[in-house]
Image (cartoon, rainbow, N blue to C red):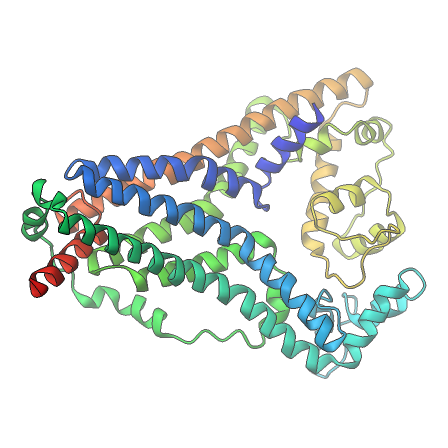
Length: 449
C-alpha cells in the first residue's frame, strides 16, 4: 500500500520531475509518434516511416537530455571545482547575497549567520562555508560559469546536436530511397514539387529572429539559478530547446510548426497541470467537503493522523519562524516531509545542511497545508481514519484525472492543432521538414545526373 501511495504522491507532485516523465515518456511520446505516422501516411507511407523514426529519436533522446542534462553537468562541474579550487560547489550562491551597503541581509539566510549557527552542529559543512566566504568573488565567477554551462550545454545538445544528427540520418536515407527509385514509384517526387506552399510574411518572425540572435548573458544570475528547482531549470532549457529547434528547422513551414508546438508544450507541461490540480482540489472541497490539497503520503502517515487527532501537531505560525522551527524540531512531521519533498536538505546527523538555501515560502506553504487538513479532519480515531481514506481516494482520483487531462492536451490536442496548422500553411499532411529534405536531395541528384 505504501509503495502505491508513494507512486501516486510522486506522480501528483507537479513541482517534481515524475509527472513530466510519465506524461512525456510514457504517454505523450508513443501517442505523438503514432499520430505523426498516421498523419503523414495519408499522403505517403514511406515518408510516414521516416517521420516515425525521426519523432522516436527526437522524443526519447531529447527527453533523456532534458531530464538528466542539468544535474549531470552540475555534478561534473562541482567535482572539477572541488579538484581545481578546493571549494565545495554545493554552497548556494544565495547565501552570499548582500544589501546595497555591502552588509548581509538581516532576518534572512546568509553565510555569516549559518557559520555562527552551525559551527558546532555541522563543523565540516561550516568549513566549506568559511572557504567560500574567504573566496567569495572567485566562487561567484566559477558558479556563474557552472550554472551557465548547466543550462547552455543541454540546450545545445537538444536544440542543435540531436536535430542536426537526426536530419542528417534522414537526408542519407531519403537520398538512398531516391537512388533506389522507391520514392519515384510512389509518386512522391511529383507530389513534393506540386505541394502548394503558402508564403508567410517575414515580419511575423521579427520577434522570433531577434530572440534567436540575442546574446543571453547569465552573468549575475547565478544566485537566482542556484535556488531554482530541477523542474524550473527544465523549463528554462525547454525554452532554449524551442529556440534551437526553430533555428535548425528545415524551411519556413517547419519553423512555424516547431515554434507553435514548442510554445504549446511549455504551457501544457509547466503551467496547465498546476492549474488543473488547483481546480480539481477546489471542486472536491466544494462538492464533497474533503480537503485534498495535502500530499497523499502525508495523509497516510499514522503518526501525522495521531498528532492531528490528539491536537499535538506542532507547526510554525509565520514564514519567518519556519527555519528556526525546523532546526529546533528536526524530527517533526514538517521536517520529515520537507526532507522527502526535497524542500530542505539534512546532513547524516539530522542537522539541516547550512550550505543549502531553503525556500521558506514553499516550506511554510507545506506547513499551512498540513494545518488546513488538521482543521478540517474529525478528532476521533474512527472519524479521522475515515476522513483520511476518503481524502486519499479523492486525491488519487484528482491526480489520475490531472495526468489524463494534461496528457490528452499534450499528446492529442496539441498534435492535432499542429496538423491543422500544417494543412493551412502547407496544403499537405506530410511533415514539411521531410518535404524540404526530399526536394533538396532530389535537386542534388539531378545536378549530379
